[in-house]
Each structure stands twice: as structure tokens, then as C-alpha cells.
Length: 217
Length: 217
DNA sequence: TCCAAATGTAAGCATTGATTACACGGAGTG
DNA sequence: CACTCCGTGTAATCAATGCTTACATTTGGA
Picture (cartoon, each protein chain N blue to C red):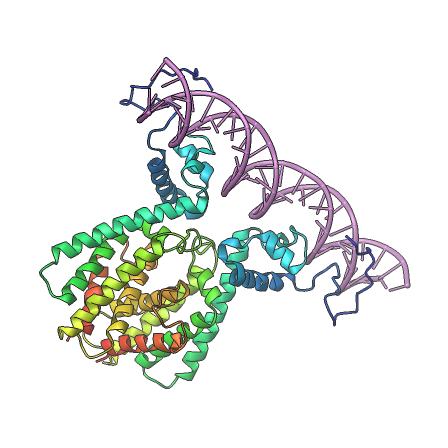
């Protein structure tokens, strides 16, 4: 290295990265770099070394924070789940006064807003081959959201808002529809929307509304 | 090796694998071993070496047939697409006399039958991180099926079989529903069906029928 | 019969995930 | 201020893997 071992840059926090020995917040920097790397190079091109290089640390440094490559990507997924949860909570708070079916709709729109606003995060969280879904909090938190949606559907039925039918089926169908739409979006399966005239998010919400209408009494 | 270099096993095709120099049908054997390896060890544990070992050839042998690891998995996906196409053609042939909406239903059921009957193949084909979707025939064939479904939906509308609404939206919604349901199945997202009392395939077809009914006139 | 193409083997290189021993620096304590 | 502890990053290294190259063997056809 060209740098002397006495940087004396202890107090210089501002300005360009003075490259002090301790990064300061390496963990978060690694997560952000990983997301950026997926955006530019693709998920399969993500290596721990490349992420370390992007941040400017040695190849072994990331392993202080993430024991395995899978753990790194799982952490990205966990952060993604945080954002999803925030988005959902925000949507639910805004629809606090509405009936169960409209709250269900708000939750769905919150999901779409998150997925279309953070496509890389959705990609990571939905690609089981690269993360540890079971051995993390992801499964539990995922199930929690699923339970919330199922409860809403039951409440909606109890309130007479639903067409005759099994509310569990409705809940599963709604989830599958949302998951499939988001996945089709990041996989480039949308025929011609992603060009310009139409906003994919608006279009997807339209389809979701169509679903809501089809199960409403 | 303990084997002499003059096996003289040219004509002995029957019986247990006499391990002749040329495998005979290595390409297909590699594909099958890959599928089996994914079933037992998981998609992320698939390495070219492990597949070669399972078949009983040297680590470099697979590269005569598949230039890269991605090519191997892409070939699995291509074979999966073959089977899907067969299943769809069979379903369409059986529903030849029906109207457009019922043919659409038959196609959907063909898809579910394939996905639930070949979960590993569906997993590979739907995991973009490990295959070359664009640089293969997968994209084209996928688009072809999509076009068939879209045409059916248009035909159904022209025949007055559809509720008022955009048939393109209906087609996209149906695809997303199917894709999401299949993906939820292989990801273990089905609440309690996969246990015993209920047949997941039957349940999924029920949900799909519910969708069909919701868009029918 | 003989040659050429196809196919598998053997050996090795480059990259990458992961481990280990060591170096550095910051925070608390006296 | 001096000292120590411990969290954090570095350097060196190993093992596994993707991939390449040179060679060996078999097969099929002229």
C-alpha cells in the first residue's frame, strides 16, 4: 500500500474518505454496495470480494460482519423486509378508519409500492437460492404478514363484505397475484408497459383492484 | 485407476455399468443427475464437479456438453420447457372442441399439472439468477405461450364470454396468479395444504377456477 | 484398414468463499 | 496522561470450484 501506517486522520470525519483504518460503518456500507452491485452487474455477479473492493476494504473484512456470502445476501433481504414492513405499516395507518376489505387493499398497495420502488430488494427476498430463508427471521416475519392478510380477509367476511366463498382461498389468491405480478415485473415479463406510456405500478394496482372487486359482495 | 486400458467391453451394453470409456449418453445423464442433485441437496449446492461425480465421469467431462455451469442449468430449464409444452399441448388437444375460455382454463390446468409434477424443473426455470434466460430459447418459447394465452383471452372476449374489462389485464392477472401459486408451492408458502388431507394441485385448480369464474360473463 | 471426429481424462490455472494470525485504534479506567 | 482491552480491519493462506488445455480412447465412415 502507498499509505503510511500513521494516517493521523482521526478527527477528519468530513471530506472524502480519508481511509482510516476503521471504516466506521462497514456493515451498512457493505449492504448498500451489495444492492448497488446487483443493480449494475446482476445478482449472479455478486461476490464478497467485489463488494469489499467496492467499499475499499480488504477481501476478508466483510466476514467480520457476515460469516458467509449467504449471510450477506440474507442481511440484504432482512433489510428489505424492514422496508416492506415500514411501507405496510404506513399504508395501514393511512387506512385506519376503513373497513377490513379496504385495509386489505391498502396493505396490497403498500406491498406493490415497496416491490416496484425497491426491485433489487424484492429480487433478493424472492430468490431462495441465494438466501437463508428458513434460518433467519424472514420466514417468521413473512408468515406474520400472511397472517395479517388472512385475518383481514376473515374480518371482511364476518362483516359481510365478501362474496360467498372461502376467505382462505381469497387470501391465498391475493397473495399469489401480488407475488406473481411483482416477480413478472422484475423478470421483464410485462408485455409493453415498462416502456413509457403506462406506469407499471398504477397498472398493477388496477389489476389488484380488479381482484378486490371480484371478491367483494 | 484399477482398470486396464483395454476394457474390451465394446459390445457389452447390457448389465450394470461396465464403465466403458465413453459413457454413451452423458448429456442426458448429466441433466438427470442435476435434477436429482437439486432435489436432494438444493439448487445452491449444485456444482459441475458434484454432478460429474454423481454420473461417474471426470470433472472436466461435462464441459464437452455444457460450456458453463449456467449452460448446464439452462439446459435443464430448456428440458423443463419441453415438458411444459408437452403438457400444454396435451391439455389443449383434450379441450379442442371447447370455447376459448374453457381452452384457456385447460391451458392453465396444464401449467399447474406440470409445475406441481416437476417442482424442480419449475424452480430452475423460475430462478433467473442461475440460468441464461435471454440468451437461450427460453424467452422466445415463454413469450409464445404468453401470446397463446393472450389470444385466447381476446377470442373469449370476441365471443362474448368475458365480463366487461380489458382482456389484456385478465391475461396478465391469470398468468401472475398461476406463477405466484406455483412459486408459493415450491417455496413452502402454503399454510397447511401440503400436509395430507388436501391435494395441493386440486386446491390450486380450485383457485384458478375461481379466477375464471370472476372474469366470465 | 485407416483416419478423423467425437468424447472422456488428466493436469492445471484463476477466482472465490472461508479461516487464521496479526495489526491497528478507540473507549474506558486508573 | 498512560495503560489495557476488545472490536475491527489486514495479510496470508487453504480448499473448492469454474473453466481451459493437452492428451488418450473410442467410434464411425471413407
